[in-house]
Image (cartoon, rainbow, N blue to C red; front, side, top):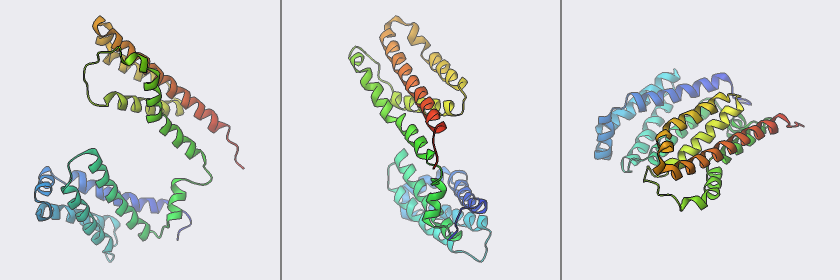
Length: 249
């Protein structure tokens, strides 16, 4: 087993992932997807699609005497796509499909480059960089936990609103994305990006703010936004202070 993962190892992994992206997103037509979803295991276009994957893997690895990776990709990709053909299209089925394909490619890569599980884990989360766990905690914290905190904090005002129906959970996801972006901006010292977010959100809500009919809704959203921004900025500043004062022994 390799003691460390080298630049050449990463290069091989990137080649495998590039072959997957090209075949799955650039060289797969809507006709192929439709044929797979309607004919399932009888789909000839699905077979053509997985053959493209196998050929690209064979080419990018540049080892013409070694065909097993291409064969494994051909078989695994067919089986994964066959399972997906019976599922309803959704973000969850898409992610499950893509993660399954990527897992196979990582498995092939680990065998080709003689990389063990320990080396892979060490590369992702090095033992000499414990701050990775702190960053991970911070980003997880500003998603759902802070969202629930804001919802509880503004609960008393929710009953006074006559909000029109919008996209389900859209507000929740907007809040999550804005807090993640703010945390990133704070960590890279790009505070101007926070101002851009505030300006963009103000423009989008401008008509509601000046309309007396929606004053309560506008104020409610403004309070939630300010809470969201405040917690995200405070989390970023606390994270920077904590990382800057870590003592390594």
